[in-house]
Structure formats: C-alpha cells, structure tokens
Length: 514
Image (cartoon, rainbow, N blue to C red; front, side, top):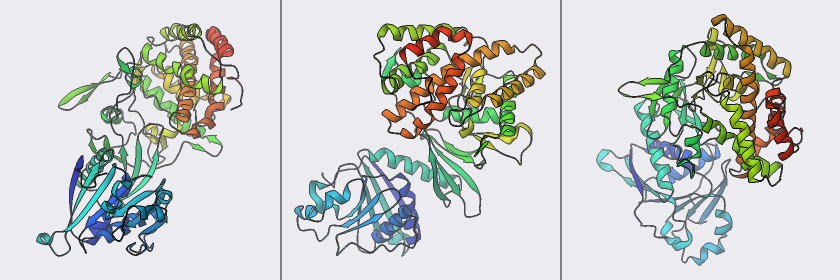
C-alpha cells in the first residue's frame, strides 16, 4: 500500500484548541468499525496524542482512561465495547519483519487500528483507511490546529457522510450536542440521541440512500418492485402529511435529503407494550388512529413546496407478489428443506395472485406498512389521537386499510392474544361505522385474513433472509409467533387452496417449533 496515495475524499477542519481537537475525535468515533485503519500524522505538538486519547476514551466509554503514548512500547491495546483498539507508534520500527514479532496480525484482527508513522509498515496495512493529518495553524491563534481528513477506498463514502452530519449539526445549532447511538433496525437506518448542553433532546436519523440491487424482473431491483423508499424524501413528505392530519409524527428540525440525514423531535421512549405484552388502552388508541385516517379522503400526492409533489406509490399486485415469493426463496430452503419445483412455485404465485387481485383494488388509503409496536411511542401528556407517536412511515403506499390494522394486531415482535385481537377489531369497526354507516365489515374481515397471511408470509421470508444473508439471527426468535398468525389467517375459508399448498410444500410451518 502506498500511504502517500491521494484520498478519494478529503475534508479540512479548523479547530481552535485541544478541546476542539478532542471533540472532533469523539465525533469521528461514530463512523469507526472493527477492522478499520486510522493513520495519524503531524509535527510535535500538533495534537496527535490529544486526538488519539480522546478517540480511545470515547470508544471505551471512560473519559478518565489512562492512554499513554506507545512511543516506547510500539503498541498498546485497549478493550472497548465496539472492539479492541490497537494504538501503535511505528517510528522506532526498523523493518516490516518486526511487526510480526510484535504479534501485529493477531492483535489487529477484528480490531480498530490507529497508527502513527504508518509508512514504516510498508505493505502490511490495508488500503481502505482514514488519514488524520494535524498541523499547527498559528495564523489563527496559538492553540489553533488544522486537521485534514482523507478517506481512502471504502472509507471515502463514510467520511463524506461524517462531514454532512457535522455540517447539519452545525447549521441547526446541535454541534455541541452529546451523541449516543440508540439503535439500528432491519434496514440500513441508524438512530442517535442528541443531548444539547441546555438540556434539549433530538434524534439524529441516518438513512442513507438505498443502493440499487440486482435487477430481479421488469428491469427493476427488488426495492423498486416492492415499492420501498430508496431515499429519505418519502419520509420527509409523509412526516409533513401525517402532522397535517394532526397526528404525532416527529417534527423535523433540519434535514439533508441528499445524504439521508434528519434531526427529529425526540418523542421519548414510552412503549405501547409492557412485560405482559400489548397494553390494551394504548393499542385501542393506535387502532383509533388508523380508523380515523381510513375514514378520511387522503391525497395520493403530497405537496413539497417549490419541489414537485411527492406521489405515494400504489401497493399493487407486483409489490404484494414479490414479497410473498420471499417465503420460497429464503424461508423454505432454510426451515422446510424441500425441493419446491418450478411448477409448485408457479402454483403458489397463481393462488396468491387470484386472492390478492380480489383485494388490492377494493379500497385504497395511506398504508404506513410498518405500523406496529416498535414504531409506536406512547405520549400520555398529549390528548386524543396525538397520544400515539408514529416514527416509521417512509415506505408508505396507497393500499388496503386492512394492511396496517393486521400489522398492528398481528404484531411480529409481540404476541397479541386472540381475544384482544377480536376486541380491537370490533373497536376499529365501531370507529369506521361512526364515520360511515355503510362500512363493510365482512369485506374488511376477508381482506384482513388475506393481507394478514400475505404479511406473515413476507415476514417469514424476510426474517430468514436477515439470518442467512445479513447475519442477524435475532429475528428468528419471532418465527413461531409469525407462523401462528399465518395459520390463523389461512384458516379463513377463502384461503383453503393456499393453505393446502403450505401444508404440502412447507411442512411444519404450522408448528410452534423453530
């Protein structure tokens, strides 16, 4: 590796003193991962030790951690919640062979490696890296420094996003906020809680544009066929639309639609479930939110100021079918290892097509698509429907109203008992009839069973894919619950032929076993 090669992305940051240098190091800690390489360079007194110490302390979660210079030991290793951190100073290295004698390969495996005098390692360091060059900037003051960051290889994209976050926080008044990782989800999104020195709180949502996957059919990737949001624009549009309906979507304080960043109102963390499962009163209000929405004449295009209106995609037959096919592609090979012939697969799709075609065009409304317990926050200080905070709606489509109701009442992550499910369905029907005396509950119940089975089928495939492809086995714990929902939905008389297909080609799918 040529350490002196030009970076693919460069970012120059001016810092006023050691505290600002340390703050920059803490900020950059959010983009670092195991197996990353960070090189440090700069003259004596430029701030390398300050930067390294702040970075290691932040990763370790210990602001008082002793971090001595590795000048004489050549290498220091720190254990952190993220991964081991190797801090090395190779100035005294006489040859590349000495790295092996130090146990370099063993120490660096799975670790974040931070190296001073990295050029002494020759070809022993990877090409993907972050270069941090610190220099005195006496023209601006005795403590001023200029830090030049260079992202090489795959690090270039991550550094560009770090710069965008830095600028968004600065422009919106959150640059001095403490950042704490909250969670990621089954997608590529991540969330951080921001705590301002004045006590204010917000959420930083990092939702990078979705890269196009391989073409599946119709010249489109899976995300295009399934009508999944490919950037943050749908989230911003639907957030404004839901708030215009007097619902509690988070206020957007600032956003960068190009990089997929938004600073959101922090709605808190009070759930609609407890240790015993769903909290009936909270679920009843969440059902009332859906009934209210479904009783309104909602637009399929959302105004966006000077920009073209955002057109909500239709949850059409193509989207619904590509989702159920995930069962055959991912779940059946993993959990019901039979060779499903092409003819059997064609029958599966044909049966689903017939059922869905009778449902998908019946009635259309905003279908938020992920309206379930992880994405609902209870806001007891608010009134009426605004007590239900809604945070995940970027994949909203124009679809049948039964979809979101079944998403909530057949929650993949928490068991909703049969009695509570029926009680809440009755509550939904009463609310709909209050707005429309002609509400067809029988037709809704049929759609509920069909779309419930469709959703359960899709989720079984998605959770199997998360395990096998994405190395996220934690979702497998929910499979028995989803299978029970599927069995319940397939018991509807209209599903008889499809139920027989599952019994033949996915044996055991109705059992409670893993």
